Length: 338
Image (cartoon, rainbow, N blue to C red):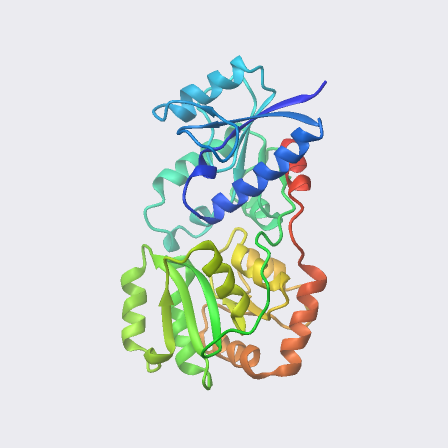
C-alpha cells in the first residue's frame, strides 16, 4: 500500500535559513517520490501560497492541534516536521528533523536557547527522528538519546559556480553573529595572519554575540580589510560564494554547515574548525583542512596557507570535489520517511 505523508510546510514560505534550505530540499525529494507514485504527499501551511499545492491551516495552534487533526482526517501514515519539534499529542506517527544540538552539549556558547532546548528534548524523547548528519546523531547519543534515527545523506545544498570576481580577492565566512560561530576569534586570527592584499568578507546578520563581534572589529589592526555584508538576494549570495578565493568556517559547533559544503563541492578551497560537523567532514582529508578554533594563532596559519600556498589549494580542491557532492534529495526524502 502507498504510504501517505503529511509535511509541515511552513518553513517553505518563510525567509531563507539553513533549516529552511533543508526543508525545501526535503520537500523537493518528497514531491519526486509523490510524482513517481512511491508515496502520497500532502503539505500543510499556515498561510496561502502559490508556490506549491498545500492545505492551509490556522496559524494559531498549528503544530499541536491543527496539524495532527489534518493528518488524521487525511489518513496519513506519517507527519514529517522539518525542524526540532513535534505535536504534543498525535495519533499519527511524527518524524521531526534534528539539525543542531550544540545548545545541549555546550550551553555556555548558546544564549536564549531555552525554548529550542525544551522542544528538542521533547522531540528526541517521543519519536523516531531524522538527523541531518552522523555527527549530530552521535551528539544526541551523548546526551542520552537512545531512540530510532535516520541519518539524512545531506551534502552540498546550493550549486555554486566557481568564477573570478571583480575587486579584491577575499576569504569568506557565512553565519550569524552568535557566540558559537566564533567570529571574534576569526577577526583576531586575521590580524595575526599574513593576508597580503586579501579581504576578509563576513556575511553574518546580527545575533546574540553582535556586541562582542563589533568590539573585535574595533580592536582589529586590519579593520580596513574586513568587510561585513548582509541583506543579499539569493543570486547575490550564490555569486559571493562562487567568487571567493577561499572559505573559512571557524565555528565551535555546526550540526551541518551548509555554506562550507556548498563551496567545497564547487572546488573552492575551504578550511574549517576541527569541532562540530565541520571537523567530521574535513578531518578525513590528508591535506590538513582543519584547525583548533580556540587558538587564533593556529587559525592564522591555516588562513595563510589557504590564501597563498598554490599546491595546498590545489590539493584541497581536488579532495573536496572527490568527497563532497550535491545532495540527492530523493534519497534524503526516502531516508526521512523510512
